[in-house]
Image 1 (cartoon, rainbow, N blue to C red):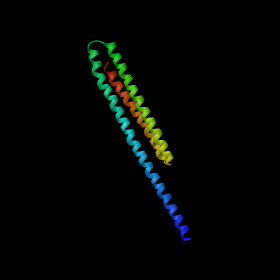
Image 2: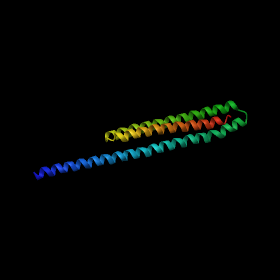
Image 3: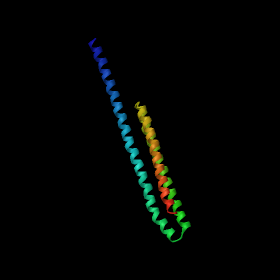
Image 4: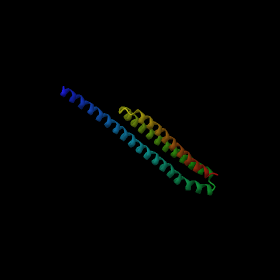
Length: 143
């Protein structure tokens, strides 16, 4: 009888430890995913800002020289670079989101998976807003 109780107790403790471990692991996966998501968004903001910093003086110089068509062509190429960067960033966010959500669901942390999906949507929105601001800064050069 005592052995049976001890065996049942051992199984219950092991199950509890396993559940706690899975919960800890889920939180770790979530927080690491959030940090990676933050790094992606920060990198994208930086790249978009760098494109604006590179393009602005060239466009200004062309506009001052009266070369409006050439300035517009440079702006178009800059917009394309911003769009390509935005596309790469949103692809990276989507891939990260899929991986993290899948892992969280495997760990039974559906509430964290739901929260992470929401963070991914917000991150993509921020990247697109940053792209819009970068393009607006270039458009402003044309008056």
